[in-house]
Length: 585
Image (cartoon, rainbow, N blue to C red; front, top):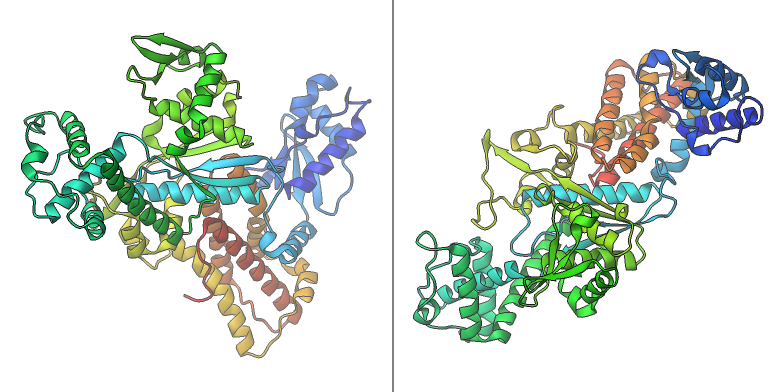
């Protein structure tokens, strides 16, 4: 309902241009917002307060002039000046009836908008290191990123979804040596497992699949593996030990065979991650390998651009980027003294490459522990001549899983975690998706398994889905009585929906397009969950207070048209969340 009102307001401002107003108004200033108090109408605008100075009038005088210039509209029952110069709009019953008709007319397209105007957006999310299965924390990032992508697409943005595979660097070497050590165990060698290795059962599974392929070809005596290595923790340093063990593995089986182990482990992990996400309803347009940055020359292009801009210098044998000149807290090494490029270099090269692909806005969804990431990458983009504000980074706060009132400990390296797959199998995809989205991403989330599995009104998944199923049950009852539903007659009689519960449902229904727009603007898909729960509450209250299948055919069809509108909007909202809309429960 906002757009028709804003168009009326713009027409009034244009009518005052050259007389009351000195110049034609910018269309962007003609905005209305939902009134916070129903006594002040349905919508309000503060436009008179913003333009009063240029009009050389008091805000109330300008508001009155705007009010008098407003074109007549069947959507507005009345408009009035209030307070210091606000204009309040009260919608007519016809406005609600027209919007209900639009819901029926547009169906699954209702709520979609043109806010993005085709702007190309790349949203990168999850991007978990492929060193183990996805855990429940990754699940929150997946649900948020996938839903935000859906919301942006519904709002007129051209959206691409991408998973960045961190398949280069030390962490994958640690995975490879962890698999090799478990492989040696499987071959009967009594080797001590490194403290800094990956300990999950999944590593044993990868080792078994490796042995099925290579047999005992990569077996080496335990004594050769461990003799002469620096001591592991607790007697020594676990970081030094694991690095030495990686080098020993390369020496004993050869660099090419070590690479073979690494590639096998990565492939197994990525198959598991991809399958897990696809079963969760999360599908990416592209899986982007970090290693391709080096292979494609993207890293060298980024360094060359920084060099050309005079933003690199040498110190202590390393190459540094002048990040502090662009708002970062310290300068950053891009090439170490041994010639190796840093993770930071890959990060800025990756984001430059995103821009080279034509994406206007880059949205990164990362874990809460990446808070220092934003300034660094923005600095790199700015230094390379790209607009630093093209990058948005959303940090997803941590998830705590509670079972029987007890917090479940988590830690990938120590194999103390619940996987996303395990959680999905226990509570189902629908519950996972909606529970992950119940709270704003910038707040920690306590995931209560008891609530998630309950079939009560306190469980928002059950409560919302039950509203959708209840509408279906009404129509089954209608069919059982042998009564028809005349949609056209129902919409034509929508003016009869004047009861307080009906008006509450209608008022909730027409908010849906605004909720989608605000969810897109604020990167806040949790707003859709809250809205759907409010709509379900309005419907359940209506259901308990009124009889829909009444003898009066006109009223019956009108009420049925209304509850079908509720069902359609709930289904549309759940589709954005990728939560099912059951016909029965």
